[in-house]
Image (cartoon, rainbow, N blue to C red; front, side, top):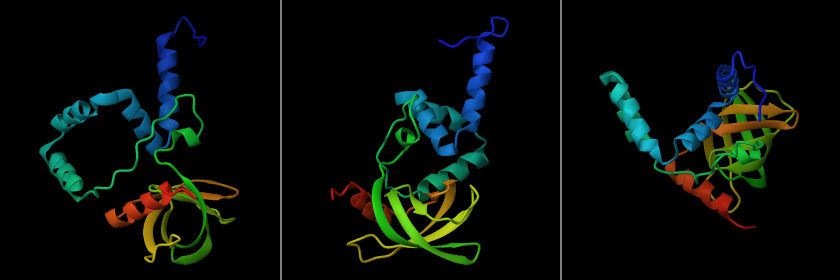
Length: 183
């Protein structure tokens, strides 16, 4: 159990929770939110929609109607977990040639793991979190190359994680099939 200052009690715990949650990346916040809401997601979304202005509702409607229909497999987060247990999508280790463009400069490297939601690219280049990248690669045994835009979500001395911005339905199905293949 946590030691709390009796003078501040619950407020100290709440403040610490607020700080931890505000420091989480957006994708991990969404995973946590879904876990906390549980099966009541629809009711919570409906409450939020009712509180929106009509203009916000129209924008949401347009976005929802334009969304791809591919749903990545659901994965929950362990509240005691490490980074890998907090992933939304299963990942597959691989070695795939990657060509990518950042601010009109071309780079070549390798994808070391892949999921329907993103990749890890090995490189000594440093990119800032939030940097937009255009990635080109081909999956083994698939004739069509992929061209997917993404955003750098994290980096380390070995490379960076790229979260795909939007995956077209057909490419999403090919990615899912590749990731689920047993080698």
